[in-house]
Image (tube, rainbow, N blue to C red; front, top):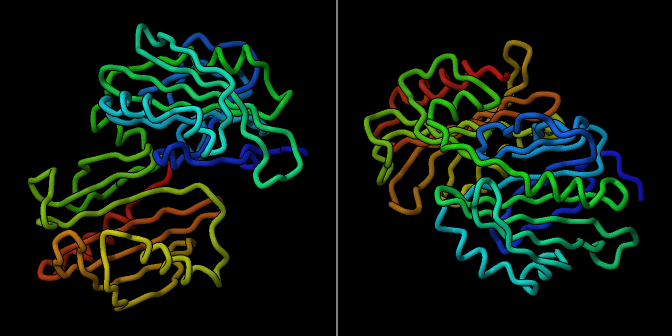
Amino acid sequence: MRLRHATSLPARPIAGVLALGLAALLCGPALAEPIFPSGSRFGFEPPSDMAPSRRFSGFERKEGGATVSVVELPAAAFGDLEKNFTDENLKSQGFVVQKREALKVAGGADAVLFTGEQPPEGGAVGPAVQKWLLLVGDPTVTGIIIAQALPGAETEETMRGMVTGVTIRPALSLDQQVESLPFRIANPAGFRPVRVLGGNSVLLTQGPKDQMVSLEQPILVLAQAVQPPPAPEQRDGFARAALYANQTMKDFVIERSQSYRQNGVDWHEIVARATDLPTNVPVVVSQTIRFAPDGYLRAVGVVREDQREGTLAKFREVVDSVQVK
């Protein structure tokens, strides 16, 4: 089996908490200072042929063959994950554990390193993928770090060294997290960021409250995805499927769905009415997708139906001002 890109590596969620891509590492001289994936608190000293991934929080080798990814969770998650990451549970997710070790990393944080392999799925022919999973329990954050490589792509020493050599920095301020996003908002149009998610998306609102109950304030989420965009003839169906996948709303009624071209860029926009599931409140949803050759930017704005006047135009002002870095 030949592998040219890390996207060819098989991936599975682990214990229902990992919806993640995998990050990379290969041999090479360690850097003097740790490199932190965009917005992440976990830093590493990757070899020279590794770079931060644009597809996920982590690193990947430029020529493919190995990856390492990071998931950050609240500090309280460590205890439950440590109990649930049994050999049996991990095996059910495709990770056959050969060794587990209790370690101290990053200046004294508790950690457990699982070493093993991920066999080919469904009896497929091919080599097993070597895998390392480090569960880190810092007093302020929990980390799940997954590294994997095809046999011969890297040595045990290099993979283990990069994973266990993790550095944890203090929590980033909201401004620092926003600055780390792969895009910038030139015109917030009265909206302000309240939360950054996954290093590639941001939640904004208009109003004084950071925690919103019953959709008291309009919300707008911007997220960038780096993956092949759908073909032009598939974009309307793609956009509708993305809208309907929102599990916090029901009873969608589309008012408008259209593709258009603006400033040399392809866009798709949907405006729909729906019902907010937690509150049963009627809402209006505006979804705008801006396509690029290597991915797309998706914006979803939600506002109570009785507050829609002028708000949809504000959503559009924000989206039109976004500049990809």
